[in-house]
Image (cartoon, rainbow, N blue to C red; front, side, top):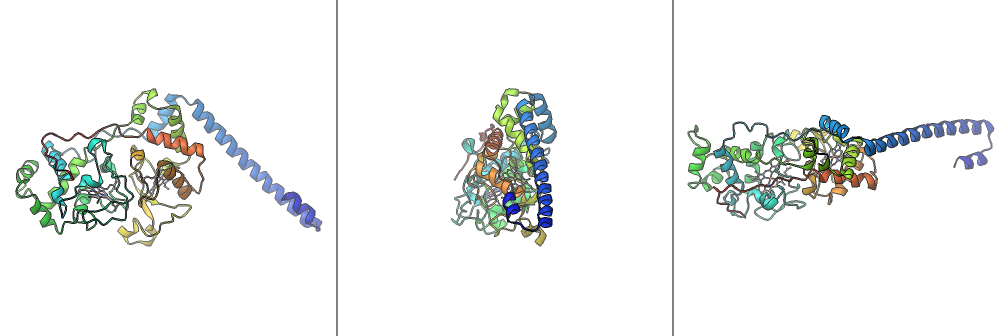
Length: 362
Ligand code: HEC
Ligand code: HEC
């Protein structure tokens, strides 16, 4: 291209200027290229030679281990948690007794709090428009739902019961009536000071208390706690790539997300523009397409991905996030190592139903 320009040009001054400009551009490109090379060489060397201690230091300061208890869980009594557990599996809370929370957020038999569907059919068969996120670790987040529209677990818990595309109960009073008289005693034990223990609000409080017990455990935390063999070399490299690519600036804190909303499509717009996200909560146009940054803990178990469930595999979700958020096409090698690291966040803890409960599962 450079040569071609020289030959075809007849005006010497113009040619000289063009050469200077081209040289300057070439020089600039070279500098950028060399910087990039040396940067990638250093990071490669870093990931190849970085000691486990150094990696642990970095990961501890940028991420840290999952706390052992959830915010607001101090006052949760065993009676309240057990009640919440029963309600989580209670199909009487759906209009035709076909559906419980567990239908879309399965935690039985190693279930990871999701249904692994793009979107979920409600009790009346109609699908909602968003992908069901996991209930594991949900209570660590600053707000609930993709659009951060529910301020807490208890604020969230009442909504699916009444949502026409979820459990579709006609009213709060109807939901309460469904639990009479069987649950009367359990509510009294869970809310000993309440004049009227069985209320809709208390249903949501018990559900929240139970969900505050759903805390994952994974190999990454074992590594952070000192076990060098808890991660493979590829997974360690993947963490370095995740950090190098700036993913942790949004997926921040011990849960690697769940701390604020951010635009999906910072650089390259996301193709699905139907869902306005946070703007639907605030009514502000400048909040269009802001969504809660999802937690990356346990993410490999919760396919499909994104608020609309359009990302089919973890690799696809990783690649697409790099593209939409940075306008960067991550290399196959980066996608592979980042995804490998994300799999080290797989939950190793299992939910075991408490004996007291006669789970009347759908
Ligand atoms: C029909 C399927 C379905 C049922 C039944 C259902 N959910 Fe959900 N749940 C969803 C979907 C879809 C979302 C995402 C909603 C949104 O972002 O607008 C969600 C969101 C949530 C969240 C927020 C998680 C996060 O990371 O933001 C929690 C917590 C939750 N549900 C708990 C419950 C509880 C408790 C029940 C039972 C009372 C329940 N769900 C019943 C599908 C369901
Ligand atoms: C500017 C903030 C930001 C940055 C930087 C960012 N993400 Fe995200 N990420 C988000 C948001 C917001 C979503 C949720 C999008 C939605 O609503 O569907 C998301 C979704 C994801 C998902 C899908 C999770 C799920 O449960 O559906 C994965 C995986 C992911 N990001 C990985 C990454 C990786 C890997 C990087 C670095 C290459 C990265 N992210 C960088 C904000 C960010």
